[in-house]
Structures are given as structure tokens and as C-alpha cells.
Amino acid sequence: MAAATTYSELIERVLAGDIRALARAASIVESQSKPARDLIAALFARTGHAMIVGITGPPGAGKSTLVDQLARVIRGQGRTVGIIAVDPSSPFTHGAILGDRIRMQDHHADPGVFIRSMATRGRLGGIAQATLEMSLLLDAAGRDVVMIETVGVGQDEVEVASLADVTAVVLVPGLGDDVQAIKAGIMEVADVFAINKADLPGAERLEQEIRAMQSLGAESERANSAPVRRVVATEGRGVEELLAVIEAVFAKRKRKGERAGTWAVRLRELLREDLMTGLPEHDVQAHAQRVAMKLEDPYTAVDSLRKAICG
Ligand SMILES: Nc1nc2c(ncn2[C@@H]2O[C@H](COP(=O)(O)OP(=O)(O)OP(=O)(O)O)[C@@H](O)[C@H]2O)c(=O)[nH]1
Ligand SMILES: [Mg+2]
Image (cartoon, rainbow, N blue to C red; front, side, top):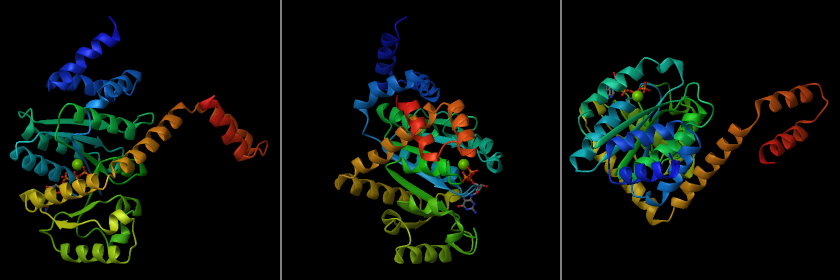
């Protein structure tokens, strides 16, 4: 069976909105093999329609609840949704995964919501790449909005969120004495701040702290001008407005021709993952030995490793 023929048929069905074909294509993308690349390369011309939204924040901030509510609003507007839940590799969020699945069953019968979760655990590189490819697949399949939920605990997860067109950072009151307590990396990728659990005490103070940080110019340019909105995800309060703000940021970015900027981030990420995955572990170990024994300086070692990858 010729692979090209199989794919062209699969691609046609994906583009026509066939859910089963989409599910099959998603499994191919998850496998992170050469076929995945071929598939995305072939579909790429049909991407660019969807708004890809990253939803990140500390464990338990209410990201899944919020994604669920956003999906509800978007569906209510007659638009379709794709959801990518990046299952955290962090051990302390372990129990939440099942919770996510249960909640998402609300959308189970709705073909307008396509949900896929991706595991970071045990993956040999490539979570950012796989997530980006999955978003492109959902985009090509005609989803109007694609949401990527990641826990903002590790560098990897933060990077995944920054691959989106617009990234919303979900914060909650009572995380600590001030926002500085939150990992810096997660703040700087914010295009929008969502203060969730605004029904709990401390939401106002958190908002003031974020605004103070912004007025000091303490973060990235993006984060310093990011709108701040309060929401209560469990009740759906403020969710419609949050969506409107996310869309406004996206529209502004498109108007300003900033999509190339997003692609610059994505290309760097793809290249980095490519290099890391292509790095022969055996060679790394061998050079590490030599450097440790002072038989080689680290720059010579890196040079040799680069040659091992690039030829
Ligand atoms: N009081 C209050 N609780 C909320 C709100 N939103 C979510 N929660 C609760 O917070 C808990 C965690 O919600 P999730 O949506 O699973 O949070 P998450 O950020 O997806 O969690 P992880 O994926 O494990 O990082 C659940 O018990 C929710 O019911 C809110 O607006 N107010
Ligand atoms: Mg979650």
C-alpha cells in the first residue's frame, strides 16, 4: 500500500471535516514519526484559519474548568473547537487528569468539540513540536478555535504555551504573598491575564499586584500590556468577556502583521527539538567524560556534537 495514496485520502477526509479521519490523523501526529511530518507538511497550506489559544497557569488554577467554559461559549456562537490537553509530567498534578476527562465528557456527544490529550511523560523530546503539529492539524480540519491547556510548571510547558497565537495565563488568589512568587517564565508569555476563582478572597489584591508589575515594566512587552480579567470559571462568570479580550489581542496581532513573530518562535522551537532529538546520547556521554577529565574543553565538545548532528 503506497503511503502517499493513503495519506491523500486521509487528508481529503480531514479537510472535509470527517471526525474519524481527524482522530486517525491525530494519532499519527502523536506518534511523532516521519509520517507525522509528511502529514502536516501536506496539510499546511490549509492552515491559518484557526485562533490557537494557549491556556497555562499553576496546577489547580482552574484551567480545565475555564477551557470547558470557553468551549461552551464558542459552541454557543456556532463555532467549532479543538482542545489539546497536555497531560502534565509533573507528579503532583497526577490526580487531576482523570478529573479533566470526566468534566470533558459534557462535550462528548458534540462533534463540534474535538478533545485530545497528549502525554509528556516518557516522551523522547518533542512535546512542543507534537503540540504545535496537533494545533496545525486541528486548524486544517477547520476548527475555529484551538485551545491548548498546559500546566505552567516546567520550562517545557511554558514553551508549549508560547507557541499559541494568544496565551492566557490563569492565576488565582492566594498563591502566595505576591505574583513574584509565581515562576517568572510563566508571566512573560502572557498576552492576557485571567484571574480565576474571583469568588474567593484576594482577587482584587492579585489584580493590583499584576497591574503594579505591569506599570513597573517588570515583564516582557507582551505581558506588560496584557489585559487583566477576573473570572469565576465554575460559574461561567466573565468567560464571554475573557474570550472577547483574547480575540481582540489576536485580531490586533494579525492587523499588525505579527504572525511572522509567532512563527519565528515556532521555528526556533522546531529546530531546537530537532537538534535535541537528533543528538546521539552515546556521543554526549563520551564527550561529557572527556570534558570532565579535562581532555577536551566544552566548546570543542559542543562543536563535535553539532557536527555529529548536522554532518
Ligand atoms: N472557587 C472556585 N473554584 C474553582 C473555580 N474554577 C475552578 N475551580 C476549582 O478548582 C479545582 C481545579 O480545577 P481544574 O479546572 O481542574 O484546574 P486545572 O488548572 O485544570 O488543574 P490542573 O490541570 O491539575 O493543573 C476544581 O475543584 C474546580 O472546581 C472558580 O472560579 N472558583
Ligand atoms: Mg487541568
